[in-house]
Length: 262
Image (cartoon, rainbow, N blue to C red; front, side, top):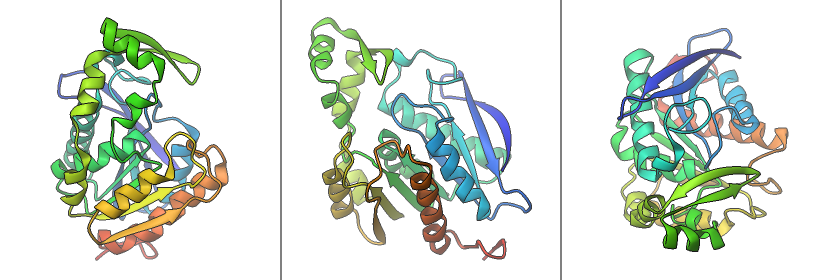
């Protein structure tokens, strides 16, 4: 797939690193904005494979590193869920100004919760997709285990997450706890696709059930069977991309087979 390296600024004026993946031999029929998982980056293999499947169907995908992660500027310790949502809104504005406003919002893990929250401010979006997403952002703080108590007592702590160390401050936990997703999901007013594996050991399948039950129609659920949380198997992530492309056609007004916009 073709791609271009890009950058845009967040609400605080810091440079965020991005790339846009483009269909090989035709103009995009729709644009998607992708939010990566907690402490991940835009370059993880799962996102690359999902983007590849989407570009084959004519969908351009913009993916970027949240503030303080990957190649983006900023200090991760000063970020939180709300700043991630703000980054998504700024990314959508960048797309509207330079390409086309995103009709599709895709989020993986905590990125899934972020796109649900950001959708209210991204008016161009007609379809929202969550992959292995928590029903409440506070799920992340519970996953910190004993480190959470240290952060509460000391105000911050160095936390090991998948072999990498991140400084997490108390404001991060407080921000997570302040978000109430139930009403956000009820008021989504977009077509919603929930993808989740029943074997996910990081974010349990009960989260998908809660999101799906809370959301209003139109909504769909796809089981990812034996997939792991990070979709490490190439076949799983390519499957996710192909499902999103097939499902999204109905809600974007684009014909992915002919490349035309309806």
